[in-house]
Length: 486
Image 1 (cartoon, rainbow, N blue to C red):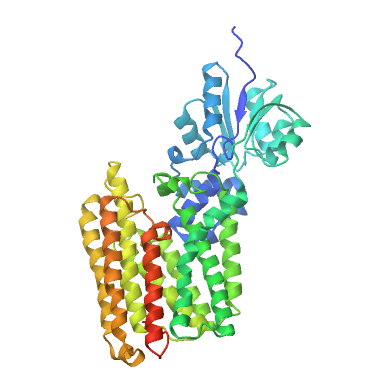
Image 2 (image 1 turned 135 degrees about the vertical axis):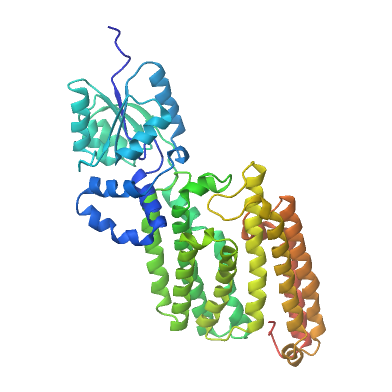
């Protein structure tokens, strides 16, 4: 009888074969399906981890083909399989997902997983299952976490894959380490990236109402708005994390979003779920020290963003209306924090402008997928045939914003505020140029699918902003009534 090369290699799944974790993948899918399932998780857990995993698996499918695999390690396993080595997939994940993974890769001879029998195939239980399968035959084990030390105590050799800090030293004390694969990313750096700090620039809108009401120089008002900015930013980051956790499947099918920390497997999903809660608690903790009106606006913002993440983003045109409303709510929040009134003109101008930008976002996403031969974007309600309609609605909304601006400049309010309000008419052609240019670039396919990122990087936008500041300064110097645009 020909002896197979090397001991059978038992391979862990979560964090080893894949850079993700099937339990948290399925939990995110469950909560996305119905957020109220969150109340059932503790109830199921009372019956044991395996029972909870079975309940989740009965309700949620995970697209294993899209999982972020440890490609270097997978290539190693394929080489071992070709050499005739016996490979065994042993995981604490539910047997439904484990079998799908095994079928997808086609290299495993046996599968050990948690099932409906109530046994969680982790730690000592995994050892028992392996020994029941192999008897007294020696085996090697590939894993990545501290719980795998219990398996390595019974293994002849160890393969470490993206092992937790300090784990290699612990493993060396009990087993021979045969091979180490390490492609870990800094969790702190990845968490900051997932928070999307560049998106905090949107929250500078909170300062606008106080500036236009000429109250920003008041130290107490300025402090309140600064605290509101931090609170709103942390709340928004909490939503970004949750949105990415809910959108794992669709993000992995996107050419750019597939590189996001959660989608790429560079950041633990468990860290993300904890981060969602911590950021939200801190955000509302800060809001507690601000006017109650701001607290309730922040609460409304969070509820609306949750509704958007779970349901509304898949509703045609409602999704872009909600995005525009979320921008406008920043102005309302800033006014609440400063305890000033946000004018009708400002809110109307904001709604039309940001609706146009939201439509740019959808148009760009759809155009990218169309260039790849897909008819629609995963998780969105639009199809390729809608491109022209999105373009027309977006341009019309942008021009409507310019019309609101022109009507405001021609209003009695401005005439009473400025001696020479005609200076402000320069804003209209500047706004027309900016909106028109954005849409031309969008239709050419040259627009980043996030208009905020484009604005941050676009030099012409920077120059327009500088000119707008100079025009405003000139209008203030000419008119002795002060800063009162919009």
